[in-house]
Length: 141
Image 1 (spheres, rainbow, N blue to C red):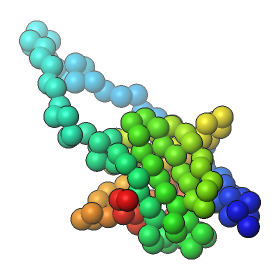
Image 2 (image 1 turned 90 degrees about the vertical axis):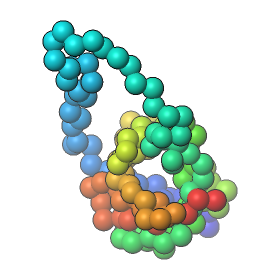
Image 3 (image 1 turned 60 degrees about the horizontal axis):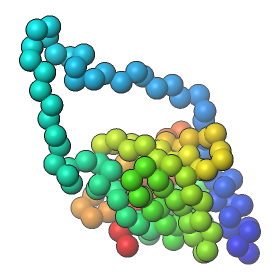
Image 4 (image 1 turned 90 degrees about the horizontal axis):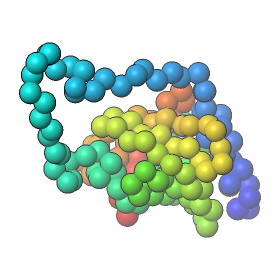
C-alpha cells in the first residue's frame, strides 16, 4: 500500500512538471543605483525573510485539484535551503529556493524542479503548484 501511495505522489509531481520555464536574470540593488551614489548595505532583520517564515514542518490539511485526497497528510519540511516531502513513512529529501511568493522543490538526484506559488491566509500556508491545478492548504505542525 505504501508503494502505491508513493507511486501516486511521484506521478502527481511528475504530471505537474513542465520543464519549459525560463528564469529572468536577477537585478541587484547595485545595478539600480545611479552612478556616483555612495553604496550602503542594508542588513535585514533576522526573522524578516520568506525562508524563515516557511521554516519548519507544514502538513497538507486540504487539497484541491489532481489526486487531492492522496496529497492530504503530506508533510513539507523546510530547513534553510533543504525541503523534504513525506507521508506514511516515505520521505523524499531535496533542495529549495524561496522568494517572497514562490518556492521550488528539486528532489535529490533528480533534474526536475517543481515550482510553487504561495501566500498566507492567517496561519494557513496556501500553495499552488505552477503548471498544475493543484492547491494545498497547510498548517504548521
